[in-house]
Image (cartoon, rainbow, N blue to C red; front, side, top):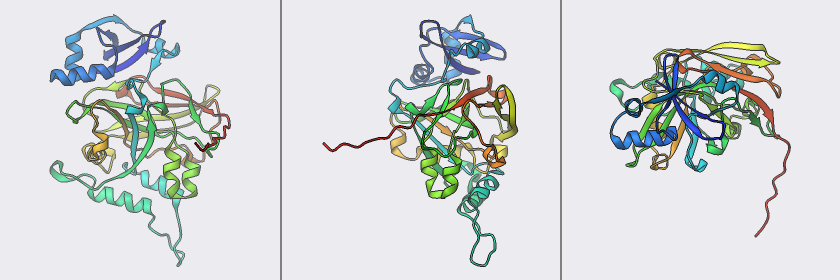
Length: 330
């Protein structure tokens, strides 16, 4: 089952569910967030809860996308209670991309093992513990709260001070924290973990700065287990023409960590188990246009698509106007 959210002409949000090609409004559902909460309190899975509610009119999701009526497939009424986070160096092949950005030479002139390669090797050796145990912790980063979320179709805005704004095609886990503090996975979605790779390349300690950017996810949430082998395509379009295209792989068959291990190391912190909060946690990628020397420009459109996840995620690039922040003494 795929879940999404659209607006009607009056701005009211409707939850849409589809199995296969047929998409229909979910009767009585005000939002995916409230739907998830009610499903949890009823003690049934969200797919079963949707089936119990029943379905209304058919929806043309492609037309809704063209009309700009798609919104993020989940949100929190208070954006401060939605958390955007992620993990890196989790995919087979991702280390080579990152290492090329951070490569150094030791005093003897021989290639050193960078921190990125060390972290990647730790994941290879301990990211998939036997019998569902706890493995090595991954690289982790914070991207912001719900104010940083950009709806499918809307512009990813690069700050005026940014050195770059590039796509990262990823799978994100979508979570709501239950009344008792239990993290509840709603499902998985495509995501664009938009980042500033030029700033990151200056010094690895700038990683935190480079990640404080917009992100987009959806348009649809895949309810249920993540496929073992996810195969998709990441593209950049300029003036309607493709200027860069590359396949991306995800799913545990293409990762050095299990999803369960990544989830454990995020939700092990008490602050991330606050009842009612929403978490969008991005699992990493091995595919970047930046690594291929692509320089994006305002108006370029990022497109991330994978058959299991319904509609592609498309977002144009924009750059914010310069604005200086002044701190005033009280």
